[in-house]
Image 1 (cartoon, one colour):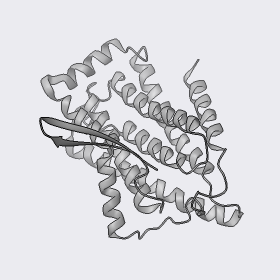
Image 2: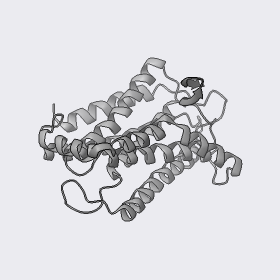
Image 3: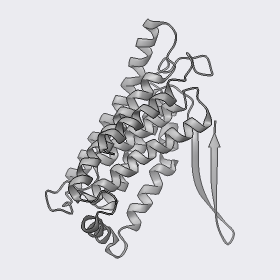
Length: 270
C-alpha cells in the first residue's frame, strides 16, 4: 500500500468518525459562536497555565533534555539514518514526513467542517469562519515561533544540509494541527470508541512525522520533541483562550512530591 493510499484511507476514516455530529454543542451553543479576539487576561493566563501542564507539552521537553545525556541525541540520529528501520530509506522517510504533515493539516480542517456550528446557513458560515481563524492563528504562531527558534539556535542538521535543525518545523506543524483536530473532536457527538480511535490516529500522524524526520536525516530526536511541545502548547493555548469553549477538557498528568518519593496523578476532565 503506497503513502497516498494510506493517507487517503486515514482521512476517510476520520471523516466518517466526524460526520456523526449534531447541530449544536451540549450547552446549546454553536462551535465557533463564542470565538473572540479579546478573551480577557484571566482567560489568557488560565489557558497558558493549562497548556503548560499538558503532558503532550512538558513530557516531550523532558524527553528532549534526556536525549542530551551521553550524546544520545546524535547517536540515535546516526543509528536511525543508517538503519532506517521504519521507512526503509532516507528518501522514503522524507517523503513520508511530508505526507504525514499534510495529512495532519487535512485532519484538522475535516474536523472543523464536522463540528456543530448551527442549523442556519448564515450563522454556520460565520461561526465556522470565526473558529477557523482561531486555528489559523495557532498554526501561524507555531510557524513563527519555530522559525524564530531556528534562527536563534542555528543548529546544524544531522545531514549537514544547513543550520535550521532545531526545532523541527514538520513536527511542530503536525502537532498543532493534530491537537486542534483532537480538541475539535471533543465538540462532535460520537461514541467514545470512535473518538478514541480518531485520537489514536491523530497521535500516530505526529509521532510518524517526528520519526520520519529523524530517519530522513533532517533532525535529531530533541529537535522533533521540542517541535512537538511547541505545536501542542500553542494549539491548546489558542483553543482555550480564544475559541470560547470550556477550558481544560481532556486529560492531564501531574507529579507531586510525597513522603519517600512522588505521586503521579492522571485526571480526566469532561
